[in-house]
Image (cartoon, rainbow, N blue to C red; front, side, top):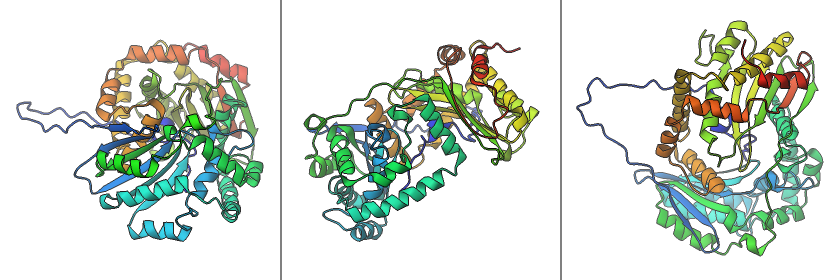
Length: 473
């Protein structure tokens, strides 16, 4: 099953999204059809289990899934990797269905069943025709509450996960960001990887899996999400039937989250057999709940993204992309704003084969951060806002994307901002707001650095850190 190694969509930057040009009508006398505002309905059962839906009466299909407020962050050093291991075992048979029966049932209805694990969430979801929603909810409840977790299946999946880890270790971006979390949140749950270390994958036992389920798969930490043609009332009835007997955290030892400390630090892995220098630099960012969440995204979009394989346009909107292009400093760079329930990472990921000028690339990237504290133009803010709003709309294309948006927001903040509300919030952000964000989160702040590859030219930590309070010359 697919694993979300890093946050998707907005968390990892507005990849290659171009701003939508505003279209001004020549005549304003004609009426313009307006779509009704998006409505998210929510109900909570007596045991704390929540149902949240966005109903589209014209849709012929629906995505239904369960979002769980638990991922690798809910593990210990000893059990790190358990959440992801459980994801693999969920489809290997229950007390009611064998693995073959599960697969056949989904295939016969033409549905799609999947799951993924992140640092803070585990998600199981299915896409099907509206008429098959009752069957998909039955299957989801079965795999969440009745998985057999047979030792033979555990051993088979152990080998699969080890191979998956080997593949992940070959992806430089994944490696750099895992190390970035590890150094920024040292010796803390958020700093661990999702798959876990090899020794854990080799030793995780059935008791570990059952213990994780007992502690984390509780009604008050779950949201059943529906998007598409399924009516809210129908999903509530199905939740009553299949999830009303789930225990709540009060009946078990509920894990407590504590806000992790951000550590100004670095990790460097020099490997001259790699043709590029791959460097991520981050400050402590904002949480999903922060009032600065959308300002962080707009500021990220101002810094922008650039990739020379996408074309050699001399001007690509952001000041940094233009400078990097003109001076041939990088193969690509990507700004990012990754949020969690109580903290985040805001930064930039740089890739270059011009390894003798790594210090220049880092210096001018951080000088751009410093500029944002005292000199932000309205035009670049409007461009960034247009990109962000376009990305938000594009990311909600389809019932699965809408379900993900609902599930993530409900599980992390308790309510969903619909696209219309988000557009209003983003539209109200000003250049002054961006400057205030930069002064609060960027100016003279400690940084975390993760660097892999040909990084000999990367200056020492204190020299790089000094660029966090440098005025543009």
